[in-house]
Length: 218
Image (cartoon, rainbow, N blue to C red; front, side):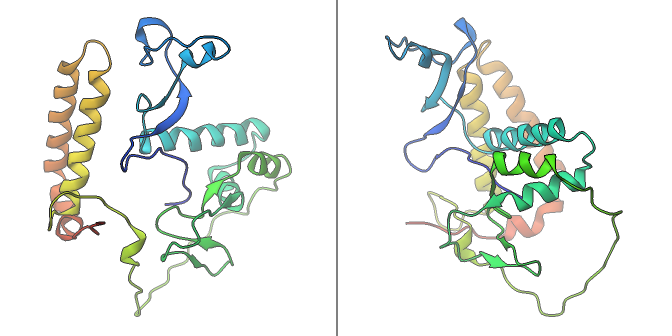
């Protein structure tokens, strides 16, 4: 993971990201707000909003577009470095947080942190493109385990394989999303079946993940 972005809170209260909604009957927000808050009818938030990677990834993609609009000469490696240099961490209790060889804080949970859009665009405007990429191979004989407390997975039963937990959450998200839209449940069921088929097709590629046990938070 290179960087992170807000993705909503689904632990207990299912608070999604505050974002724009479709207008009219195509929208998810069916509430009518009175002045001076009538503009809220065009947005989704709290339990009506969405979360997860579907919410986080577009934010980074949009920031990458901002960087290219500020400096069209940037390559993908330049964009990556700008994202890294403009990021910052907020959870310094993360047991997986460490300082790398370049002196930057990094973790497996949020990478180099959450980018600051203003800082990133300012860097892009005055950026000097990086030299051509070189390839260096390093071999370590003393691997360091990832801190287990750094990854938080909520499960309802003991001994549930991590991959199955992720699969169940993905299927739930698909169903919940399509149930709020027209034409409803039919495309949700099709999407779920396709998702399971893809999972089964590439199951052997994730044997290590399937065998891993999640951290149960009580």
